[in-house]
Structure formats: structure tokens, C-alpha cells
Length: 226
Ligand code: HEC
Ligand code: HEC
Image 1 (cartoon, rainbow, N blue to C red):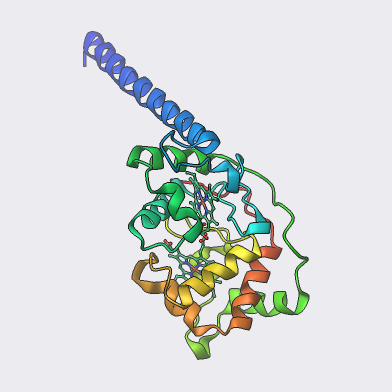
Image 2 (cartoon, helix red, strand yellow):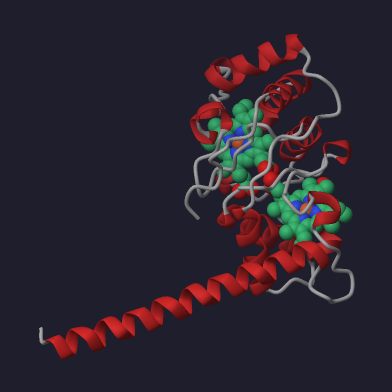
């Protein structure tokens, strides 16, 4: 390749590269703005009211931690809330008027933030944590319940992009999700995987896994990949 052709080509490539990174930066800034103020249309409340600007959530009201979930997962959940497949009574009114671009932007933003664990509503219950750990690591094969870590990764730290981290999530939120899956309100899990699992657990077992995963620290590396 001649010098001329090579330099024209690399010039073009750097223009493409620069414009795409500028675009990603703009999108991220717009996502942060939505997190701080909403998108400006009626009913759009700032995400930070319930998830905080750093994505730590609010254990006292069972609002989930979303910092460092993958952009893919965050986007999938919000689209599910809009479609009604993801049961989310509190969120539904907040996200109905977000555009696809808004959702992508705010998902990129929350995927990029990191924050330490917040104190939960009560200290972990040791008996429930022990039972929960057993179910998480070994499953309950007699009841066809596989180990949670098979899909959610070691200690529940997530397997990007489809399997969210549940390690260090608050206990009120975790339990509510397991109940929603069990009683078939939340229907956005691929092939009904979580619905089948949650239905086979007793209420005590659901509480136990929630206590166990909530007792751990959230993954520092959450959100590797998109
Ligand atoms: C009024 C409080 C509130 C506001 C405002 C809010 N959320 Fe939520 N969010 C919740 C609650 C509570 C849940 C759990 C589902 C439910 O009960 O509705 C949730 C669930 C989620 C989930 C699913 C998390 C998971 O692990 O599956 C995502 C993602 C999310 N919210 C993102 C957002 C974004 C982005 C915004 C801003 C555009 C936002 N939320 C605004 C309260 C809120
Ligand atoms: C066969 C794979 C698989 C196994 C095993 C599994 N999960 Fe899941 N789980 C998923 C998938 C996929 C999702 C995400 C569903 C979606 O896209 O909304 C999920 C979501 C969840 C959520 C909701 C997370 C959130 O942020 O809202 C909780 C809580 C959960 N799982 C707990 C468990 C527990 C506890 C176990 C073990 C008893 C378990 N899972 C075992 C696949 C699995």
C-alpha cells in the first residue's frame, strides 16, 4: 500500500473513531442527566431519587443497586418494564416515556458507575445465611433447583451480559424478585428459567438465598463487558 493510501485510510479511521467516541461520551452525559433530572417530559423522575446518582439503590425501600450491572441487562429490564413483561410497580410510571436512546444512555451511565455496599435494613440472620449458602452453591437437586452460582457466577457476581450480579444486592429487593418470579408476575427471564427455580423454593428457602446474597459484598468488577 502506498504511503498516500495508508495515510488517507488511517485519517479516515481516526475520524470514524473520534466521532464514535465523541458520540458515546455525549450519550453517557445524557444518561447522567436523566439520572439527575429525568428526561424533561411529564412523569419522568430523576433515577437518583431511588437509585442514587452512584447507583447504590435504597435498601430501606427495596430499591435495587444497579451500579455496574451491564448496560445490556439494564436496557433489557427497562424495555421489559415498558412492555409489561417485567413486573415493576414502582418503576413503571417512571420509565414509560423514555425513548430507546434515553434508555441506552442511562444504561451506559449506570453500567459505568461503581459504589460500595450500603447498610442493609437488618444484620444477616446466620441460620438463614447458612441455608442460603448451601442452596446457592449446591442447589436442591431433589427439587430440581440448580445451584444459583451456575448462572449467576461464583458468589453471584454475575456473568455478563445476560446474568445479573446478585452478590451484595439488598435483601428486601432480592426477596421481592424471587416472590415475583414464583408467582409469575415477573416474566422477563429467558425460557422461564428463574420462574421455575423460584417456584420450587419454599418461602423460607427464598428468604435464605436473599439473606445469603445480601450478606456478601457487591462485586468490584461488575459490568465487565457490555
Ligand atoms: C420512585 C423510585 C424509582 C425511580 C424514580 C426509578 N426507579 Fe428504578 N426501580 C425502582 C424499584 C422499587 C425497582 C424494583 C422494581 C419495582 O418494585 O418496581 C426498580 C428497578 C429498576 C431496575 C431493575 C434492576 C434489576 O436489578 O433488575 C432498573 C435497571 C432500574 N430500576 C433503572 C432505573 C432508571 C434508569 C431510572 C431513571 C430513568 C429509574 N430506575 C427510576 C425504583 C425507582
Ligand atoms: C439457569 C440459570 C439460572 C439459575 C440456575 C439461577 N438464575 Fe437467577 N436469573 C437468571 C436470569 C437469566 C436472570 C435475569 C432475568 C432477566 O433477564 O430479567 C435471573 C435473575 C435473578 C434475580 C433478579 C435479579 C435482579 O437484579 O433483578 C434474582 C434475585 C435471582 N435470579 C436469584 C437467583 C437465585 C437465588 C438462584 C438460585 C436459587 C438463581 N437465581 C438461579 C438465571 C438463573
